[in-house]
Image 1 (cartoon, helix red, strand yellow):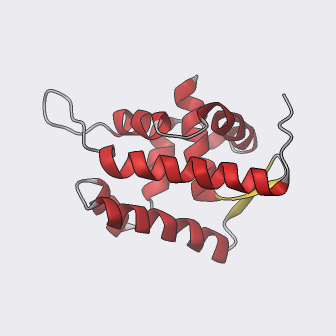
Image 2 (spheres, helix red, strand yellow; image 1 turned 135 degrees about the vertical axis):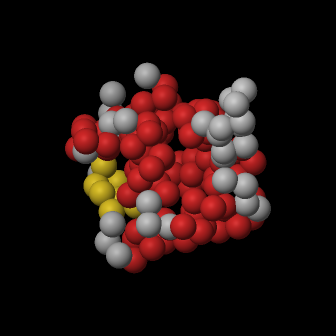
Length: 142
């Protein structure tokens, strides 16, 4: 299935989808625990994906990313990679302020672009963070 969107439409899709993910993530990421009180990163990942503005489109992009990076085709691996090398983000995910979490994730995306940590997926240039969020969506949607 070929997605045909003008450049502005593509970038808007990504902004709206990522913004939706950030909104849900900041409200629920690592907020739900199991009966033992241990917080489940996979449950949190499900909530992130459920908050995407365009989950089907995000899954298409995510599957294309995973086809290029099959070693990342595991939800736990992706959650770990989304948090890697960022102690402040990890701490905030465990119970920090929503506004701070949104700022940290946005900073991570900007840093990806600044440091050329990008990937080309279906003609789009995405930060690794964006691509991994969409890949997570693809894995959890099945």
